[in-house]
Amino acid sequence: MSNIHFNEEKGSELKLFTPGPVYIPERILEELAKPNDTHRSQPYEEMHKKVKEGLQELLYTDNECLIFTSSATGVMEACVRNLIKKDEKGLFLSIGAFGDRWHNIGEKNGKNAVKRGVEWGKALKPELIKEFLEEDDYAVICLQANETSTGVYNPIDEIIPIIKDSGALVCVDATSSMAGVKTEIDKLGIDVCLASVQKCFALPPGLALASISEDAFEKAKDVENRGHYFDFVYFQKKSAANQTPTTPPIPQIRALTSQLDYILNQEGLEERFTRHTQLGKRTRIWARDMNLEMFSESGYESNTVSTMKNSLNLDYAKMVKQMLSKGYRIVNGYGSLANETFRIGHMGEISIKELEKMLEILTDIISGLRLDKLD
Image (cartoon, rainbow, N blue to C red; front, side, top):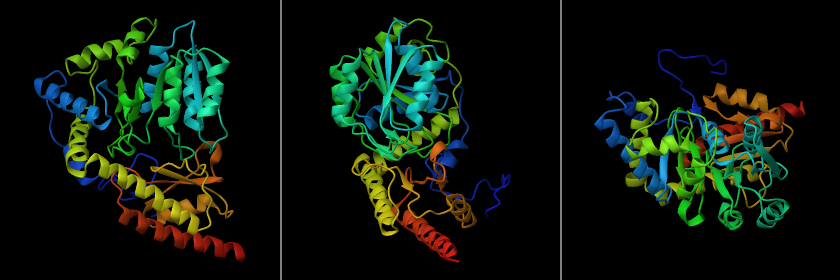
């Protein structure tokens, strides 16, 4: 199965342990196949309302929750265009590739974008945040909750209150943690918390989500050149009528409605968060037993994606290919971390049992690669 091609008849038969897109359960695929009414109909408005209410419960917020037809990167750009005025500075706190991406988006949109961060693999600490904030006045501060490239989870419960005390709006990219890691939006005062659905939500790509505070909406009204497709003010107006400004992928929204019901009323929020915690811990125990060093700083490891260093000096490209031959997809390091790290995604609907089975196969492949080095 290492020579993988597009399967027109059956679709992919691989078992995905990637940082996204992830495995989609059969019940979600069945939801996607159901017929729908138009996006300007009462049935759609009822469905849209269910999604908003479900997201508010998931995120512990009374803030408006919006649905975007894009990846999370679209909402990252929306934060830049909607919230930073021409005479203001935005601070982009980067701990990896996606923090760098957000800063790059700021520059491409002509904003006064300042980047500060730490060595990849490290997390942002409260004292460092205080130092950054003393350097200048920032209107908006953007950061990742979970950095998908490095497998690091920032201590947002500790650092966001410090940011809020500065008076800045705070935007959090929770793409690879939302619906897998508990995030209490209102308690922390997060102004924008965004994600896309192809990771912890275990849905096909095509939707992005965001909770947006009233302060952020009010700020957007005073910002010029917000654009059209991601205009927060226009989205807020349409969301009040339980609609989107433009035609959304209605089947994905139907699937999201079903998945939110499953998360909230069948698995349960605390149980879901606990399962992801166990998945992260189990992967780190396996890495320790294999003498693989975690790339992420101790105490700040992600519970949704694990990034391991190449401490055994293995051919990770070959390892990934051999896993494909067994029907499993894991991934090499992201961007500049290719061959220096590899990543295992353990998010969405993956069970401990499924993870154990995959790790057993990966253990055998790594053992074989180590033996090959001795020849």
